[in-house]
Length: 195
Image (tube, rainbow, N blue to C red):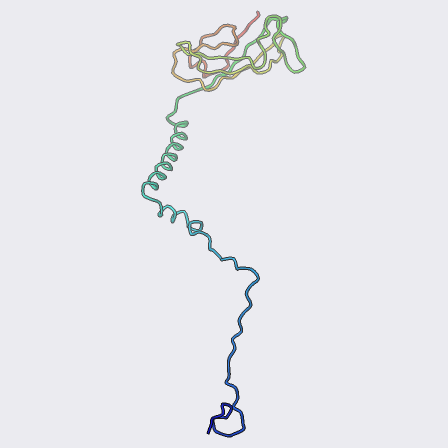
C-alpha cells in the first residue's frame, strides 16, 4: 500500500493530518536611521582631584607639590614681612606757606602760586633724600588754602626708609631743609617762602 502523506498517523484514511505547528517569531522592523552609540564620558572627567593626583607620575606630582608649596611659603613670607621683618618705613607731613600776598591767586576753591611762584600748586612734588643725597621717597602738595593773607599748601610723604642720619625735604626747587628721622616721624614740618 502506498502511503499517502496526507494520511493521519493513527491511520484513519481520508482524514488529513493537521499541518505541523510552526511558531513564528516576529522580527522588528529596522530603525529608519542607525542608532547613535551611547558613549559614557571619559573616566578622567569624573575622577576626583585626589584620584587625579594619585594617577600622576611621581615626577609630575613632585613638581606640582613644589610649586604649590613655594607659592604658600611666598605668600606667608610677604604677609609676615610687611608686619614683622620687612624694611622699616615711616611717613611725614607738613606744610609750606606762601607769605607774599602778590605771590598767589585766590581761586574759587583755595589758592595757587603766581608771579614767580607758579611752581607752587596742587600736585607739586615734595622729595625726601637720605644723607647720601639719594631720593628715597616723594609726595605732592595738596590744593592751597587761603589763611591770614597767605596761601598754605599741605603735603604728606609715605614710605620713607628708616635708618639715615639726616634727611632733606624739598618742595619743588625751593631749597631743602634738613631734619632728623625723629623730626620727620613727628611730622608737622613747616616751610615758609616769600616773606
